[in-house]
Length: 246
Ligand code: 6PG
View 1 (cartoon, rainbow, N blue to C red):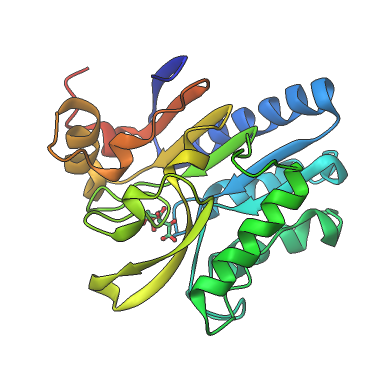
View 2 (view 1 turned 30 degrees about the horizontal axis):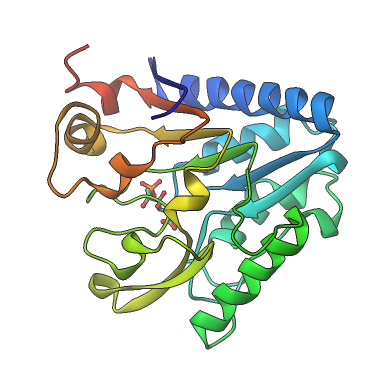
């Protein structure tokens, strides 16, 4: 179980992004103060764009040289592809801040062999975190989104990666997209010091209620994100939280 779980509801998406930016920066300051660096895995999709743009505009002079950026998942496309999570993060944040290139760990998703791309990324994590064979990395912060089917990162319902317990990063076949995605596994997500879900919009309200207020069998992927020794934070706007009992 997470050491703490909290749900924060903000009036609007704009308020949500401001609150999320403050949480990101305060978590980063704490980590840098304690260990001289901040390791964070970015979420993909469209929601986090609002947070990333705000970080670039309001915190441009932050100590980005102490920040190490990773990606919790990536589509199996080149970094220039409109579908690329890296492209989205680069356009909204990375290209706008003074972060050293060597501090940004992009998934090599241009590799036509998705499994090789996943293994290469896993080896990047092993090297960076100086992991022993059975060890998992402990990110200071992992950002996640909630998909309409309850997926998170690229851990989709009924997909093979849900049961992976030893790998850090895998290529996950997503039947509904007829494509591979490259994704962190649950052991990595659940080892984080903090996981922050960012979810906004009325279209997510049903799934938010299902994830946070119902017992689903089997559990939805987003319900399985339970950092064993970390903080679980759900940041919602009113629209996404509208169907919660509260
Ligand atoms: C991705 C994300 C995925 C995303 C959710 C929510 O690569 O798409 O990792 O898990 O967070 O699908 O996406 P939106 O923010 O676009 O609603």
